[in-house]
Length: 507
Image (cartoon, rainbow, N blue to C red; front, side, top):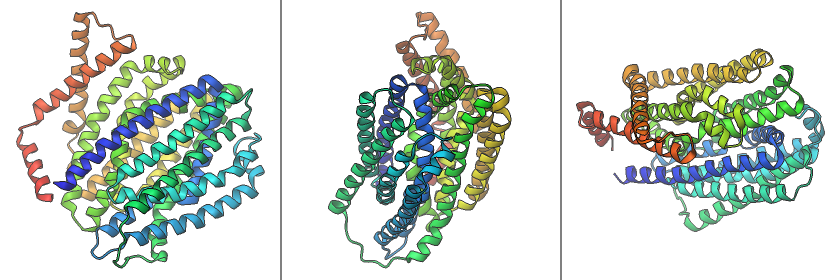
């Protein structure tokens, strides 16, 4: 019961913190778009994609590696998770220093190849400061997450974002006629400052709250590398494919007839307005994902398949219930949201069109956490490879012919196929039954029935739901009705009682 209460508390706290981060990030994108133009957001997105790839190469997704391997170490008797943290920091320093040297030496050719000749050598040469501090910080955050101190990692993320945002805002306001190089230096300066402050915070908390472990570590440094490598390889593969996809989109938009500025502007609107809006409701799922990795890793290490099956069944069902509602809201109000956020008609249209694939996107968050926690990294890597192969292929074929609608096609094809494969793998591995009518059809039916009921109510009361306050009221009433239907038809049923009994046994 204590563990359950702690997990609930951490989930609520992380959700609130992630809600703050997502809201602030979206507002920061809107600010940059208005101050520097949509083209600047396109440049920043490309720079962020490149930095993300460099970051993965320099730390191998240290947060996930450390979190999972420390969790497994804590699930064993007479263990020493501190040694796992030391291994992680040692490996990250080796990787980040090596990548930093390569970036510094080959800054000019990398700038010419990845950014189509844009003068960004200076920004690339400053990246090592961000990579090294970010790698070590990620190790500490993974350790805190595995130790069920997820709030420490979350506070570190908030400190990192606040410092980064302040630096970006101040430098943006003081910039006059910024070029590509200036825009990238603004971003790099913000990231460096945020990473350093976050690292200092994690070090301070670790020193003051840490209790020395006296047990024997089950992994030496060589074994740590062998266990971490599949996780690292999957993360590196995903980041490399994502960066390739991001780099290809502006190029293919130009082939469809757009100029360089138009291609970067449209790409910027898509990455800064459309994608954050689609992902914004998933804040609670993102908050849970790190906890799910740790809990499923602990259960897997102890061989508790009943616990894993119980987690899987509940997470899949409730994720789809939530995702269907979020998708329905975005389908109904996507046009208005896009206009309000400064993305114009294009952003609103894209949000509305892509909204039906949102349940598949949200399922990825939860299913990948379960897959990584259960140690199925090989499947995860192969599935990501297939998913991005589909996405990149569709981008190359359809974007030059159909412009932005080609991007929509790539999201539909890759997310539907990739996440159906994840769901099938999890169901088979855990032995969890799949009931399509109850899990998928019922939430869809309830969403549209309750929407119709609220539309009738608002029509009778004269509420048109065209302005922001009215839309908020409509969504709140809709959420209450949608939740109420599930509560009214679910609680007290024999199946729910059996599931509660199973959960109590597992505890």
